[in-house]
Length: 254
Image (cartoon, rainbow, N blue to C red; front, side):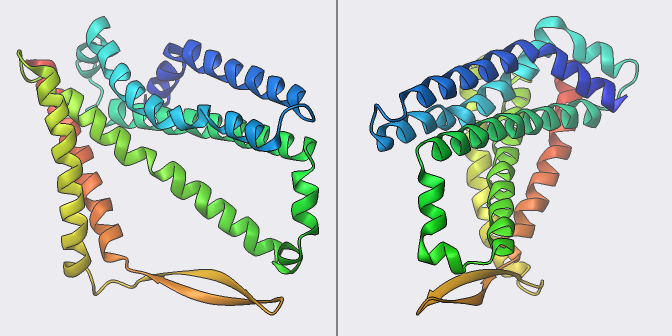
């Protein structure tokens, strides 16, 4: 049933996804045609300009997914089948992450083509610093940074979805309720992360290998990252997800 719910989200929003994908492809092709004519800095700045709207898209889509449920009155039907609320909410989160992955891969592929067309990749390959950096470390750090960037979509989308569903419990001033719930949720997340840094300090820390090039020789160092705030945020998001499911059932009953 979860997979069916996930496919429902994909089919319902395929128009917007295809439209944005087409825009990115046309934008990439246009800037590729400008290489050699326009300054490289201008082309790169213009290319990455649309990617700045990806977080805004995630915010808007987080609300739109639930607004559509109320407009078409489909949540009440699904919960009466019955379908557990967590299947509905998790499918929507999975949809947002999946589409964000698709858009980000399109953007990265386009950036690779533009950089190769302008000769930037060849220049980077010839730089002394990059010549001594192990390829394995570059790949691992690239994947790590990519995953961390995508992981940032989850708390933003989850808080936004919770704020919208919670506002449905009220008959008046829903916009104000949603805005204040959104702000207070992030404030509380920051406080919980700070408190978790102290209460969960006994947990093993994370270590990331960083690279320092001294005299043309790469030297690896371990960067320690406190795990307490990270686990506290994970627990907070898990609790917020459980609360979202409970509030969704309550809001539909109202």
